[in-house]
Length: 248
View (cartoon, rainbow, N blue to C red):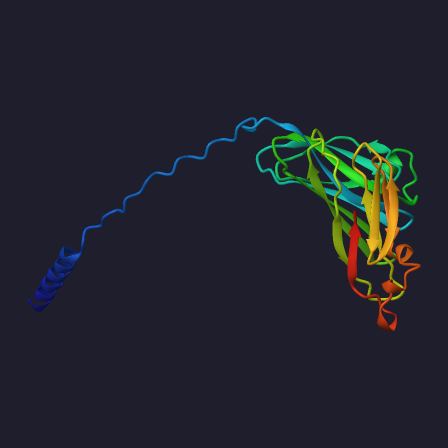
């Protein structure tokens, strides 16, 4: 009899607990619409665009590589690379199809060898990457590596609409240089990306220097050359002081 009473009391307790629970109410929820498939073509009309600039260099030790990144995640883009030599001569390279969010690289030394140009020759210039798209989804970086002397130079390209014609005007570009050691030299790379010859006047601190540039030409000016006749370029205790680099 006692165990029956215990079972009855247990059942009554469970029933009271169940009756005390609040009914479960679902929170209001708005269904999330499905993701639309990407359109076959961008909504804006495509136009011819390009990334241009940078500096590539080759010699017996220097290896130059161009890295191209497509940040567009929906569309593949075909790019047309062109190498420009320092004398302005254009060297078109085969087109590359960039997958969505894809990356490609161009070995400049190998590209020169494929065009019957010595890959160990001392050459330099800039790069242009052309493509047709409504906006600029292409990022380009040039890396020059000299493993023998533990030297790496990296530069990027800027966007330019090839169909745009810039009005003739004077432009000034300024930057900082720093030379810590006496046996270290630097250089400045100037590239004329237009189809007309241009004159560029450079100054390291107070030393003027004029650099004529042919159309699509590229030139290197070492800081030692520009400061060779100026004692103002030398700092105390045989060190170079930080200064301003100005080209107009």
